[in-house]
Amino acid sequence: MKPIAMVLTTLVLGACTVSGVTLDPSRSTASIAPDYLQLTPDEENIWAGMTDIQRERAILFINNGATLISSLGSR
Image (cartoon, rainbow, N blue to C red; front, side, top):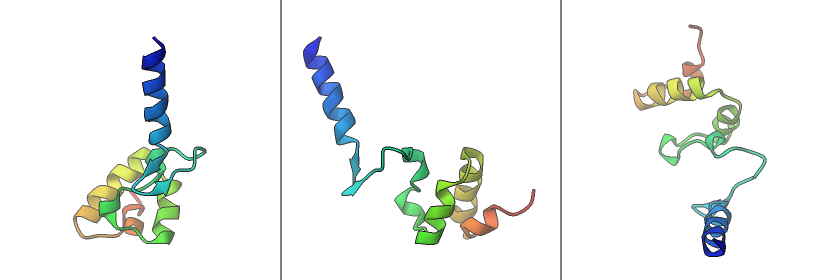
């Protein structure tokens, strides 16, 4: 049982660094936008405060050539 716990601990600690970026444990990994979206620093800050539904909509907008800001328009 101890070897399994050690492996899991290693995986969890290893997940704290992604692509050379150390993640802040107080922020969920979902608050970090996928690299392929190529958001500006200001957009990254907006992304961090968005709900999951807003993020899904934003991804659709960005993939169709629109901006993150335009995805937050009125419904």
